[in-house]
Amino acid sequence: MPVCMGRTHAVMGAALWLAAAPSLADRLGQELSGGSLALSAFAASGAALLPDLDHPRATLARTLGPVTGNLARAVAALAGGHRKGTHCLMACVAVGAVTGLLRVKTGTVGMVAILFVLAYVAMLTLGLAAWKGRPAGDVILVAQATVVTGAGGFVCRGDWWWMTWAVGGGMLIHILGDMCTLGGVPLFLPFSRRRICLPVMGRTGSVPESVVAATGFAAFGVWVTCATVAGSPWWTLAWLN
Ligand SMILES: [Zn+2]
Image (cartoon, rainbow, N blue to C red):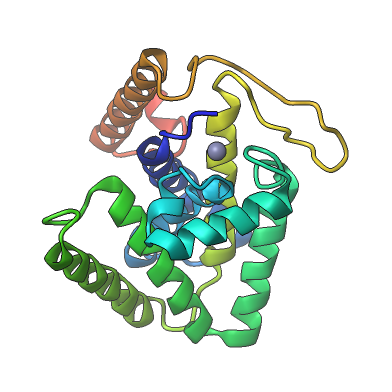
């Protein structure tokens, strides 16, 4: 099964999280500063790559050579293969819950570690690194992830409520993305093995996938611009009135 959607997943994870997070914070009665929103977008973007850790050829599995390659083989064995156990709603809930548990047990230390890993893989996948593929580029990428993580420690001041949602939500965005390609995902495992599929994007990595993704982002950009110009919150329909 083709697995070359890494960059699409990372971009969708960040974009859809940015769109949803302010209203989520409202509903939960939580504070979400601009700084925390930006940091959480890195976390959601990285988490949107996690489900494909069940495939040794996926972008995430090739991040750290044999380390992530072997991890991917172990995850694939546990998950029952590619696009199986890591591509269902239950996986999002489970990984989100484990993240929440870590937040309670380890506080800032655990959250900073998670943010570092997710920011690193997100920036690597998005190509936000100078001299990609060279040792100097790797050092710069680690430095970038360290800066993001350091900002996390400074900006969040112990308030990491959003991490659970960004991790679970990022994974969900990935799974919904795969659901829109041929092949679909077993969304309701372990209760049903049926693959749910809305193939609006065609085969993974195909021209229709690129066209749908580009159109989606263009529409998203126009929406945010119109709402901002109208002086309304862009995550509501208020600017249409
Ligand atoms: Zn996938």
